[in-house]
Length: 219
Image (cartoon, rainbow, N blue to C red; front, side, top):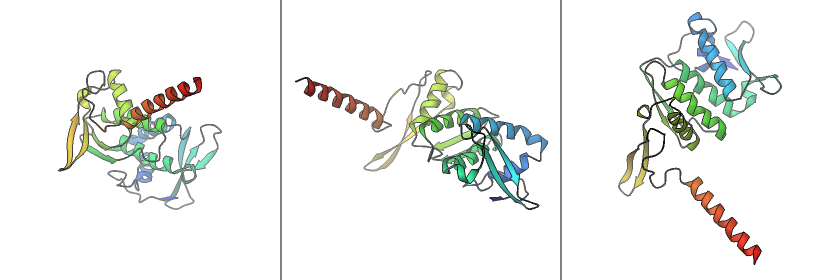
């Protein structure tokens, strides 16, 4: 259950606490009706629901958000869908709602999201940042978000000059901020040590373990 203030918020808040206020306003303002349609689109893209709706509880300022299950179309309260969905909704709303010419700061938006949903975050960020001179600064540990952005550069859907990657590298003197440049195909021009290397190391170690086991079993 969510409580609306009945006022137009400037953003969804640091923890997404005003996201339902934005939904409430968008359902009552013709100018923001397209926002509802875009939110619906992205919720479908993430496959958390086939659609959503905001339902008022009696004659009060209390509301609940209902998601329709993408497989059964059964309506489920957002609070019962899972933490990932309740975390994702404010992210989608803010990416579509924040004003032109402003800078959106976001910390680890990928938490509690599975890899495919993390990749879709990359698409959401690309589309949001392309609109009306909007900028975003995302702190992330997700290689899936970055991989999707790099793919969109290769596809020509976003320019490499529109993306800046900074890696905070630990040193004995403290953290060193290092810019990681991409070429026109979205490839890293230089791959720093420790930067998303775990999957590659695991893949090599797995292949080596397979090779050694096959050799042992043939002896």
